Length: 266
Image 1: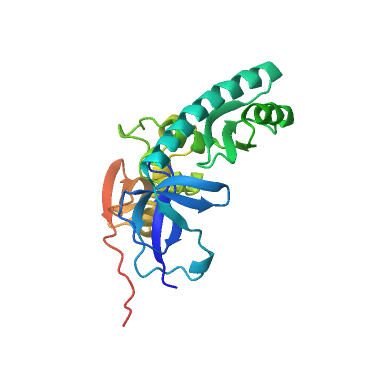
Image 2: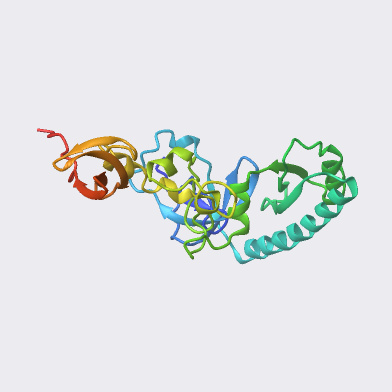
């Protein structure tokens, strides 16, 4: 059987998942999909032409293009999930649990009610789950998330003045390391290199490969190097322009290494 492969997300700018379908779906149409958690209401955001996916038969199905009734059910789920979030927070307070509940979500078929929460340590939430299940008569899942996930859910504006990348276009958050900040010659000041989530800025990953390439053959600040004017320590670097300054007899000498010559592939 021939299938069409589509990318579907379940919230704006959320992670994109691949589904197969026996019928064509317009881009931006809302659909009902089959997931491991039950049926979900999502939006088609891309068509995967000449799909590289090998095991297409293992993909979950798009069940149908959503109807007016489906959309009304989706809106009811959103409203009930908001009420469930308030109930959950009240019970957390009553039980004196050291956790912060971020959001609540019903699956489209209401077979599962999922809560995301933040906590510094492991939480015994068995009594919380029991009380929530007695109210909503469905399976309860309490999922501990990280600070980056919270920033994606809450949103905000980054130090660049634009909407957070994780809350706008990033469908996958890559790991970010301190070495990336070092590679780019940034001051290791948390207020400069940390985002609203308190973790390293996601955008440090965007140009890391380019900085690593441009830094090849460059001396480190403090290294003593020879110049036509004499030897001296390197006092500053411009990695992207592959240049640096050397202090010789109290005078800064500009040294440029030029572009990296890539090896011939012939």
